[in-house]
Image 1 (cartoon, rainbow, N blue to C red):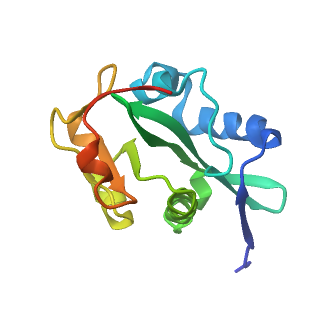
Image 2: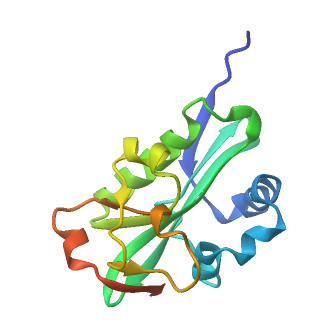
Length: 165
């Protein structure tokens, strides 16, 4: 068996073409119709909080953090989290999310939201958002709207409609 060295680093603008190809393979063209994609549309991700994983020159994973508002409360939207199929179920996605959460905490952010599976994200500190507390601007399964509090009290302070910053 070959041991591969995975290198994690903050995203740079140069990563964008490889990330786009990875997301296209993972999610297909229908991804643009999803509410979370629509919310991020036209808003630059915070590259200091967004990470990529490389094996050599091959990009094998990426995640983004985008600033949003919940009513007037600042928060972050994590996603998409994308991992090359051959590298899934090896902890790569979890490592990318942890790096982003740690960087966001260090930068003073208080709250991160995402749309995803609770079974996966709960082990990273995410919980289900109570129905109606935070509303996305489009269709989303409320069971999949999750939050992670990085600073005590940040979730209690957030209520209302999620929107672009």
